[in-house]
Image (cartoon, rainbow, N blue to C red; front, side, top):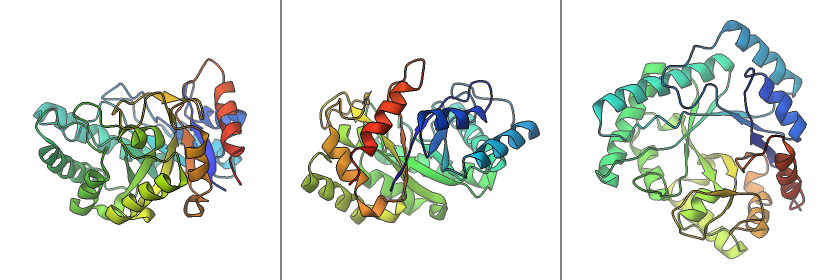
Length: 281
């Protein structure tokens, strides 16, 4: 059975995310280790490490991934932004290592109008630099993207290029976001289309590279290239698309977290997780 969870807030302390995911009824967790809108956040303290480890142990060791800052753009052609991005991503790898988080999700960035090929080349070069600077045993999960603007990673070929050309491909894997691949034109709504999408991924990248999922319905239609998350079953993907994924035996042990809209409490997470579990055969 897939391990279903959500991205939860770390307000008040990193360790409190575990209480929130338990309250939501989740079995997997994604967090930001620091404010995703800051370039130079404070280092992780020993007290944080201790509290985080103790709270994690209380959950019997559910899967945990961190999500890198949205500021990081390793595909940029702007020297100052690239320097800051490399340093910030290396710092995130360091924080993950200190917290014993072995999965770090990141977006492949934006080429800024310089073209996909140029952007991919820059991304690979700069990602390799950040990995070497940190020198940590953390797996970087390249997230599939919706294809908005000049963003990279919406086509499986682009992710394959990164993995095939990085000097550290052994540290690279993929996080599949259902809303993003749908917006990018990959259909999963019928069993036939779902199998075609996964076969395309397997041919270009290898299905074994998928380590994590973001489960989000889409407010917009197939191929729209617009990233707008919706509650499970209330968007253009619909429940059948999620039924296809959740019952794929290849992913029976994979962590899958929600990034659906949230209110002030956790009820929406609980409702979405209930919907997802109701699709398991």
